[in-house]
Length: 639
View 1 (tube, rainbow, N blue to C red):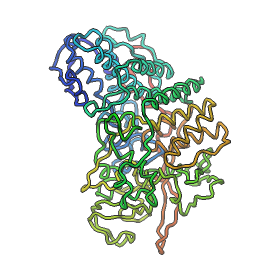
View 2: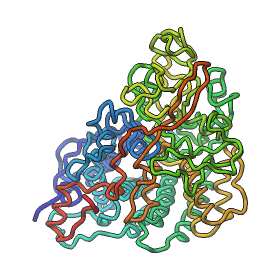
View 3: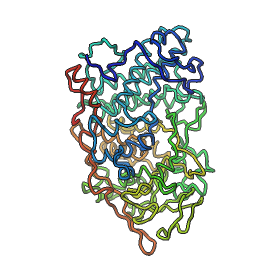
View 4: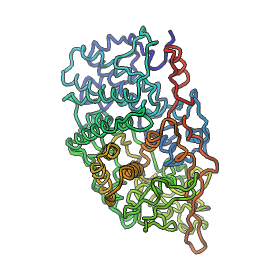
């Protein structure tokens, strides 16, 4: 019988353990012992130290996310309608260029067939390997001698959470083309009886794993010492449950069934449990000397709400019993590199800008009076998004002064024409940039000008250090980081309370618990000083506002890519969101004023909007082996 190189061939006879002891397990001496080479699994699970090292392997492929996709790319952020990747033109053979051109197949897909940097990429094989490791660990750990029961129980709980996480990631990317592996597969098993589970069935299995972990008292709710940094805990289990039942209830995945009340109940319980354990929104500027300084330039007039939001995303959570950051549930173990050099304002150091927020994302930020800029039910009057359908109730927004009076999260997240940044600018200014000339290669304040023809930070269709959209990313960029102030990107926040609150808001709105949906959304808005949602919205209007709040609050955090898919029907596509993307076309007038317009980022449509791009394809060789073994077609439609 043919065997797959993923979940069908993990043979529990001989295992070559390559993992060395991981620092975040230093609290237990057993977890600091590296396996001693090529040994049988019976030998591994005859020794508590080696068994603990096997658990280490279950952590091997926890992703760093953020900028750590191939070649310092933000992956799903720039593959959705949130942002455009400058590498798409500068390096068209890399992942974003290939996604935009539709150069993807089941045998060579740019989102999966890439070098796995910091746990990103090649998901199918790596996550199945991890699921096998977790399942095998759970099948053997109970019989291992020489372990305190409290430690054994915690390890079991961790394996349950990790397996739930890897299943959740596979389900998010690939959809319901997965079997449920509650016990490890054996070489001699009859794989002809392998069956695809429904999306809902896989989610229920994920929830069961999370519940198994939550029932174990020895698994903590929060990691409180740095030596255990990176270990999973109960809060992560609640966050996984919250997210995945929301996905199961969504149109793409629900198979025509209504799971919204169940999603509401699960989210309500998970959110309350997290609150009971001290998780709360980040609600205070803790480093005013940095984020409210005269050189931070976060919003007009040192906007405190914008400053706290920017501070949250540019600081790595500390492990403490009383942390300053009580919002982050789980963060990656890896940093994000020198973001100012590879994912900020490219001209600063002369390399690349990376993620450029789109005009569509900018349009999503309301004015500070709480009014949307566009009609949320029909935001554009044309297919190409060049004709905005303005919200007639918004009397504040001025298309020729577009960045005034906006949601504080806009100022915390995006550099726009007229923004300022203080740092080391590694170039001399020229007269063609009168706002900044003469400048110099020194630490200084520069006005970020993004008009057509600006030689350093202006709109350009090909230059890597320029902007494709008229905007630069700032959400994850420290206010003054540079080569002489090397503050790297904070560890990526894989789960945070703000997302769980919005998961609950969506489930509550969809299931008809409108008052609770209002309260949840308003909690998110009040944190940044935005007005409450207007009363009297219909269920349909409230759902639109909840979705818009997700778009703004979770902007560029890898949620939008999955949200616009799960809100789509299985027969639908992404033509309304991802086919055409626009930029701010700004022209500088002779008197130093600006005229604002819009233009397409690229004159041809992106190809990654078609129905088949709702899911990633199973790698071709895996799909063929599954077909051969089971007689069923497992491949996603269109691939």
